[in-house]
Image 1 (cartoon, rainbow, N blue to C red):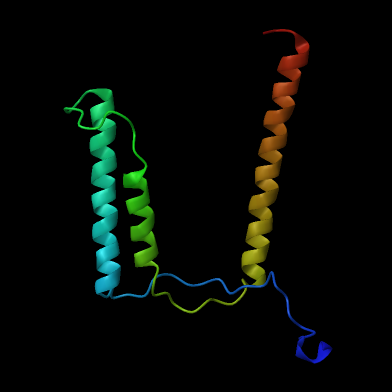
Image 2: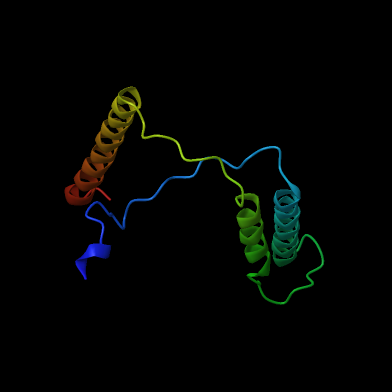
Length: 121
């Protein structure tokens, strides 16, 4: 029964899709319309909650957010093929950005520890 298995199969490997294909087809434009409708409903709901417009919903509803998610799925229904793994130049730049970020976070953490244990505040 072991003949059906692939020795090189990796269940965690997947191809990263590229950006949405352009020009948009009718399905993608429908997704844009659904996202705009969801955004307008969300904005109207939030403005009603803070009192700038008449409130027509008593409670916050997740429906506008779900409309925006559905629109996103419709827009991403056609995508470019995946791109290859980044080159060595991009890896070096990513490593440099990561090191800078870690250094900044370490400095902030160090300052927070000094302030915490010095008893100033």
